[in-house]
Length: 206
Ligand SMILES: Nc1ncnc2c1ncn2[C@@H]1O[C@H](COP(=O)(O)OP(=O)(O)OP(=O)(O)O)[C@@H](O)[C@H]1O
Ligand SMILES: Nc1nc2c(c(=O)[nH]1)N=C(CO)CN2
Image (cartoon, rainbow, N blue to C red):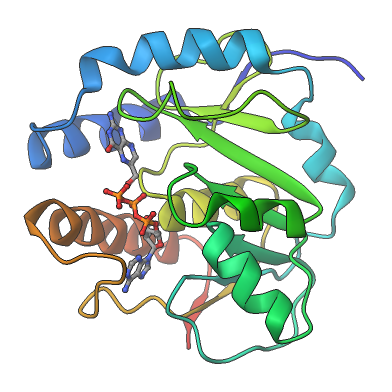
């Protein structure tokens, strides 16, 4: 398989990145490029493996999800969610993760999309993963836009051809894992970005 770096919509990414930096100046964006370079060295699988799936109408499961519904692709946001789906008898087709919420659950999915950023790149493993970045992509990495795992999964589905999508469990008012100012601001960014995609295709929130 050919392996080239890909960015779907540089203008959208520029919008997202400005928004994220303005909202969350406490994060280490100055190390995002180091993260992308490392991911570029790790990456040997193109995001194109994702094109083998039928993206017409995916379901994206966020960590607090309750309902399981039919869809053409099952996307789990974080290993935690892949585990939760597995316990309900569902295998994730894709796990979108920045490797910090029960990452061992990533192995339960078929394809993992591992995000490298300036506050995690020393923790992400080298493996048979698709690597996403939040800089101009390098090596075999991909920039889908989006920021947190949840909204990045939504952008990914949109760019891979979703004509409509369902999100199960996006409850930003009930933060999981921890509830601090950074988490609340990240979830507010996620909500804003999901709404941007929802202006382009129908997004059902359940
Ligand atoms: N109520 C919720 N609580 C937590 N995450 C949610 C919720 N609803 C949706 N999500 C999505 O699930 C992802 C969970 O990832 P995780 O809890 O690891 O946080 P994160 O965004 O990686 O931030 P941090 O690394 O600072 O904890 C979030 O990025 C967000 O997109
Ligand atoms: N530099 C940096 N980038 C990120 C971070 C983070 O903590 N630091 N968290 C994200 C997902 O929530 C997405 N991108």
